[in-house]
Structure formats: structure tokens, C-alpha cells
Amino acid sequence: MNKKPLITVIVPIYNVEAYLEDCLESFVNSEVMEEIEVFVVNDGSSDNTAEIAQRYVDKYPDTFRLINKENGGHGSTINTGIKEANGKYFKVVDGDDWVDTRSFIRLVKVLKESE
Image (cartoon, rainbow, N blue to C red):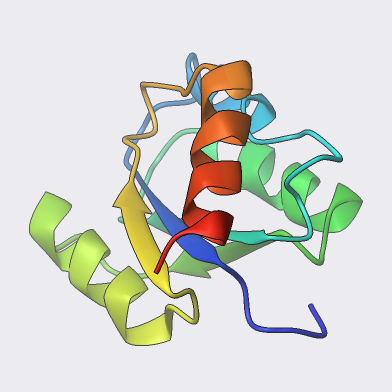
């Protein structure tokens, strides 16, 4: 990413392979991908969660980043993400959840026009 992102989204993940693709796919839209960074923070998963996240990093390296860490709990994944965040704004979306893409696009547009 060449410029500072408008919003950093932290996605804490721990053994959420059944849900993660839906979560990450909800951020894939050309209208906002240049404005966001999505840090997927793996909290020591023992399933294929990290591999799924890595596929998104490989496909969209300017938007997604995978951070692997030892298991420390939900709060520690958020704290890890905060330390790396570059966005003006910050949002957490759990790995077994997702955003409504259209609503997220509207949110990014409103944030872009706000102070």
C-alpha cells in the first residue's frame, strides 16, 4: 500500500476455517480496497485457518496481511493488530463474522468525507 489507509480492520482468528472465507471475502471490493488494510491475526490456530488467510494475502497483498502469534486470547490478537495498524480509523471484525459489503463501502465513503 503506497498511501496511509483510511481504516485498519483487525480480524482475530482462532480455528475459524469454516467461516473465514466469508469474512475476508466481505472486504473484497475494488471501491474500498485502496482505502483499507485488513490484518488477519492468527492466535495459534490448529486447523486450516492460517492457510485460508494466506490465500487472501497472496491474492490481495496490498490489502490483506497475516500476522501469526502464539495463542494468547482474543484481546491479545486485537492488541497485536493495534500495534501494527496504520489507518486513521480502527475496526475489529471477528473471523467467524463478516461485514455487509455495501454497508462497509458506505462506511468507508463517510469516513473519507469526515474529520
